Length: 456
Image 1 (cartoon, rainbow, N blue to C red):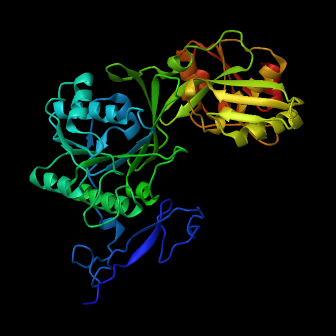
Image 2: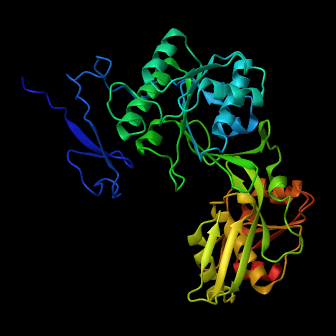
């Protein structure tokens, strides 16, 4: 009897592209050595949809709006990043370094949800029930004892549990360790992640249950698995921290139900994660006095304004070409600002080693940090510190002009709340908004980098 061969394909672990034969380099994303062999999926029969019915186009005006019911997690910072809480039928993907506190954060949130009367399920595919129980007793919480846990690595076991009892919030920790018996590949492979995530997302949308998937990250900090995983979910959150700090930053990189790039701040303690109500004061708590190269930036992360400290150090380049290193900032913007300072402001630092960072392990990706970073570089270069009560923000163009930035009023109000006496800001922001109505703070508008340096 002739043995039936199983058809296989090779799938890329980065982009999910498939090919019938192995290649050293993926034709989709160009990555090397990322193709993994897996069993090919059988094509669907017929022309009907997956439910056995034909799908017809409808007029957009006839489509009714879906319900946007929010479920509060009982943690204000978590709700802020989610856009106001969990949405029924939404799927959230949470990624972060090992040991950063992803499970601790989700256990605390599920405890609050269970205490509020929501039916929750924690699927532990990495730890045993005893290990989770030890952490739960350390964290405490009103609903922790009643929280249901399912220690399994099989997707079929999870589906049976959901069929037996409906759950409003389900947490899967983690998506890389859950496997489907429909595929013979190992857990964490491209095919398994696509299959498991696809079935769970489909079920969450059908049952209107909120689903939170915990994802692993690679050594460069990106989410492990195919990129299609991030496209399947509604919200992508990253949990990050500086190795030397006790606090954690929760960021929304994608959110279909709220603003992206929202930030929540938590502090790790012996009994779990605690919310930080005033993160600006936390980031500036250890700012040195009368130190050159230190400038306070009122940044706007999502719907809130945060004050962070930018630091720059300029030193003679003694060995070969000058070095530029940036931590928490865009290194390309640093190189551009050095060229602008050299050509437009007469500050010749191209032959100097320049190091820049955001103090406290925070990260700033917006262009509003340009002017503050330029001022910090010049301050370190001339070894002349700024006054303690001065904050700076604004975008710098290639011609040396200072351009307007969004949410200037929120930045100024946050600086005034923390006792700052003076803010250097773009002149265009003064002309377009009602910043003059803010009392108790001096607003100094500038139109170029050279003018800003003269004023300071």
